[in-house]
Length: 117
Image (tube, rainbow, N blue to C red; front, top):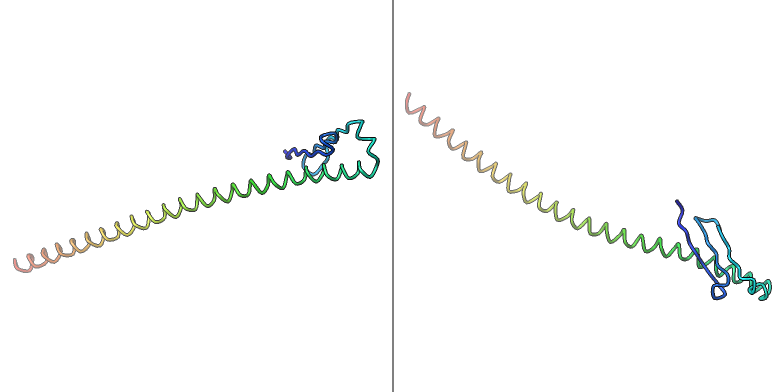
């Protein structure tokens, strides 16, 4: 669904409602007709530009919020990756120590077996 945006001019006597890129509704106070064609045309431009700029502002605010969220998620991912690296390093060291211990036991067993023969 497209976003609804609004713009106004002439102290609210001219109001424009847009949905997506299309104008959906225009409210024009009858007294605004007394302003003349040039003034009325300029007021339409003002109202339309306000509606369009509201959309741009919303998009920019949304992008800033997404950027902040992504930054936070990346920091969390970096923290978790660092923890995983530490865990992996610790596990690797433990596996090496266990292998060294097993090798030592194997040597002792081999020496014992050799002494028995």
